[in-house]
Image (tube, rainbow, N blue to C red; front, side, top):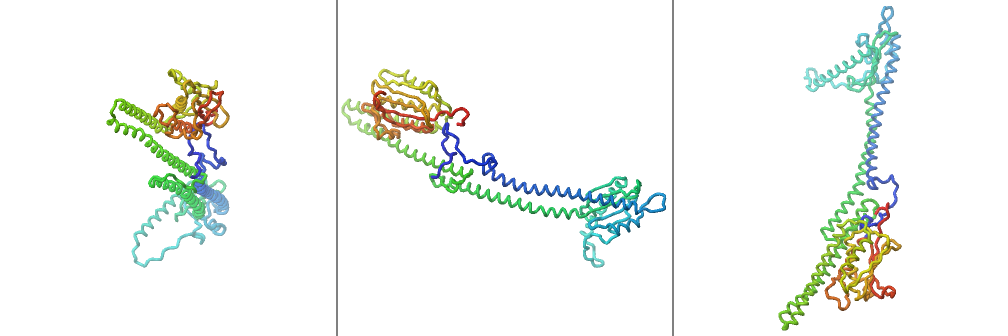
Amino acid sequence: MASVTATAKADLPGAPEPEETPWRPWFRFGGSRLGAFILALNLLSLLILFGGALALNEWRQGLIEARQESLTVQAELLGNVLGELGISRGVPTPELDVGEAAKWLRDNFVPAGQRVRLYDINGLPVIDSYEVTENIPGRILPPARPAGAPVPADLIKKIDRDAEHKRLVEAEVAAEVERALAGEPQTTVRRNESGDRVVSVSIPIRHVRQVLGVLTLEAGNVDEILDDQRRALVPFALVALAVNLSASLLLHLFVARPIRRLSAAADQVKLQRARAISLPDLEERKDEIGDLARSLESMTDTLSTRMDAIERFAADVSHEIKNPLTSIRSALETLPLVKTDAQREKLTNLLQQDVRRLDRLITDISNASRLDAELSRDRPRAIDLNRLLGDIVGVYETTMRPGEVPVRLERPPHGLKVVGRDGPLGQVFRNLIDNARSFSPEGGEVRVVLEEVEGDLPIRIRVEDQGPGIPPENLETVFERFYTSRPKGAAFGSNSGLGLSIVRQIVEAHGGRVTATNRADAAEGGAGARFEIVLPATPPAGRRS
């Protein structure tokens, strides 16, 4: 089996937090390296796409503003020149000389991609650069139709739409010129007759302060530049798409597929009755998938161990129950054959003894089988062992009958606390005390000692008796289920052999250890058995438990 991750370890009271490999803080998001990796990839793709879109929008707005500013400067320059050169002489009121203005525009100013129109004081068009030069943009006309051929309906609709659009454009231009005749320069972005976006600037032509007309200057290559920029955005979109695809692929390879493998392994455990999950390549990973794989393996390994324990427990229970049942059956079969009352009374006593033994077995087996559920149900809390042991020993003192072995408690003046469950821990101490009293001779004494020692498990409890002790070869065997070794004269069947097994199970569930030794110190009252329990203490304030 691979090593078990810290997340799969038993949740022992007072156990320290599992140590993790240190990572740089910026690499983790919410404590998850895998989450930070996924988040970074998705944010990167979105930032690339949004950054490109924002850059294009800002550049488009800057382009329009720059064109408007450039056209405004050009229009003001042309307006000043026309205001000086294109004026009719010899009239009382200054007027625009249309011929001179047209000649000057044709010879000096017809830049490519721009259109110049001149309007008189009444807003009527007098000059159009498309009419005084050969630089007239347009589209290639379709081939001529044969004479007398009917005009297609869709062509008629198109002509009507073009005429309506041209009328709307002329209305917009007329409104723009009218506002400029009022003396205020106008800058707009609109569509021309061909449907292209144009930047238009209308400047009033003045002679001194007299408005002589309006000069309209248009630049119609804005859409071409914007199309170029849209095409420039394509690489951003492709890079963002590639990053997203890579992220999806990585998520599939490093998250989806491993989870599917874990799911398939779990189904295999269910369907094929396998005992554990083992995926070494996933367990070596250092992210959450590796933690999950190790946790699942630890969980299934624990379940497998528990199943083996249940099987052994069931076999032991069956064996132990069959013994008194066999004795009862034999006695019942023999009872009709006895001849005397003395023999009948002997068989009856044997039957009663076996019934009591069977009742004790069933009670202890029931308690042992419920122990795991009780340990998982109760919430651990800080327990003062001074008070708990004092209460338990006090009960023995108040209920002790003449001739029974007394129990003496030795404890420090200050309290010693442990994180655990008072019910199961009380059962541990009662089992050990009862076991020690059953082995103690008449006039003996059971001593319970609570003390604090150095080490990882600083709390130690010793339960000592003055009995015959434990054979050296059985110092570990006594903790096995259904093991009994009673002194001569003890009532047969009064012990089930589960008491010390339950003690070890409860102590280990609390993160401690229990051992059995023999003492042979005359100063301590002669020979006898000693059971020693060590437990972790309650962590100091400020430390996580």
